[in-house]
Amino acid sequence: MGWRFLLCVCLIRHIHRYENLDWADVKRIEFQARPYDYRITFHGVSLSPEHETHVEVTVEKPGSLLPGNSLPSFDGIDIDLPKEAEGRAWLICFFDFQQRPSRQALLQLAGQVATLERRGVQVIGVQAAQTDHAELDAWRKDNQVSFPVGTVAAHPEQRRSTWGVRALPWLILADKEHVVVVAGGLSLDELDEIGE
Image (tube, rainbow, N blue to C red):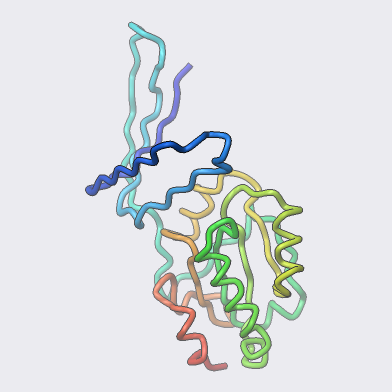
C-alpha cells in the first residue's frame, strides 16, 4: 500500500531545546510555520524495505483568493448561517482557538461585531483545525463570541488550501455578492474603515 506525504518547503531551520522538561508536564506541542509558497505532495511512497515503488510528486502553489474572485462554498465546513447573512457583505475569520493570536482576533471581532453588523457586514468564524467542540463552545460562551462559528469537518489542510488560508488567523472580506474584496491582507485594526 502506498503512502502519501506532504512536504512544506522551508528555507529557515529553527531548533529549540528544553532541558529538564518532564513529558508529563507537556499538554501539547504547537508549531506554526510562516506561510509557505509551495505545497509538495509525494504519492505512492512505500514504507516497506526493498519494495519497488513508483513515486509521483505534485507541486502546487496553495490557492489564494484574489480580489474579484467568488468565495468557495462552505462544503466540508459545518456552519449554520442566519438568513440575514445572505444579503450582507461577509467578513470571514479562519482561526484555531487553541492559538493565542486566533483567540485575540476572535475577541477583537466580538467587540466590533455590532458596529460591523450596522454597516451591513456579517462576521463569520471558521475553526480551521481539529478541536474539541465542547471546549470551543464553552470558550465562545465565556467570551461572548456571538457571531456564527463553523468548524472544519475533516481534512483541515485541504479546506484551508481551498480558501487560500496561509496562516491563522486569516481574514477574508467579501462584498454582498460574496466576491472577495480583501483576503489575508486585512488587519483587525483596519475594521473601522470598512464601509457599508
